[in-house]
Image (cartoon, rainbow, N blue to C red; front, side, top):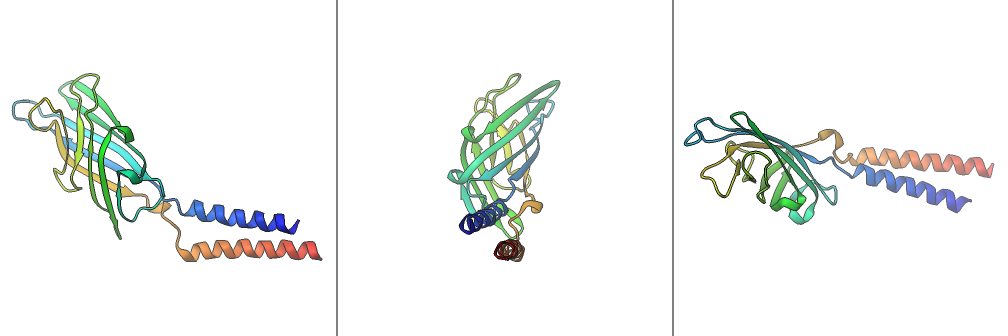
Amino acid sequence: MRNTMGKTMLGAALALLLAGAQAAPVSLSYSGVGEPGWWGTPSTATGTGFFSTKSGSYSGTIGLEDLESFSFTLTFKYKTYTDVLNFDLDTLKTFNASFGANGVDGLALDTENVRSNVLWGQAFHVRGQGQNQAWSENFDLPGYLSRGQITATMDNNSQVPEPASLALVLAALGGAGLAARKRRSA
C-alpha cells in the first residue's frame, strides 16, 4: 500500500512538472498591401496563425525539424474578390525562429505555393518582423501580391513556471504524502 501511494505521489509530481513545462504556442499576425503598379487597385491581406515546438521549449534558435505544428491563414482581397489560403506544416519549406528575453527576436520562413479558390495561388515568405519583411507572391505574376509586417507573440500567461513556484508545488505534494503516511501509521 505504501509503495502504491509513493508511486502515485511521484506520478502526480511528474505530471505537474511536465504540464508546467509546456509553453503556449507562438501567435502570428500579418497585415499587408499589394503594389498598385499595374494592378490599379491595390490588394490587401491579413493573416493569423501559430506555431508550437515538439519539446514545448521556446528558447535559443529552433528550425523546421523542431516544430510540432504550424498553421497560418492568409485572407487576400482584391477588388470584390476574397481568397482564403491555408498554410500548414506540410506546406512549410523553411523555418527559423530565435528567442530572447523579450520573446521572438527573429523569424524567417517560406511556404510552398498554395492553390486558391478565386484568384491566384500564393506562397508566403518572412525575413523578419520589421516593416515590409513579410510578403505573399505568385510565381507567375510580377511583384508582390501583398507585402507588410508580421508579428510573433508568445503568451506570457502560459510560460514555464518559475523554479520557486515548482518548488512550492513539490513541497505541497510532499506534505500531503507525509500527512497521509502518518494517518495510516497512527
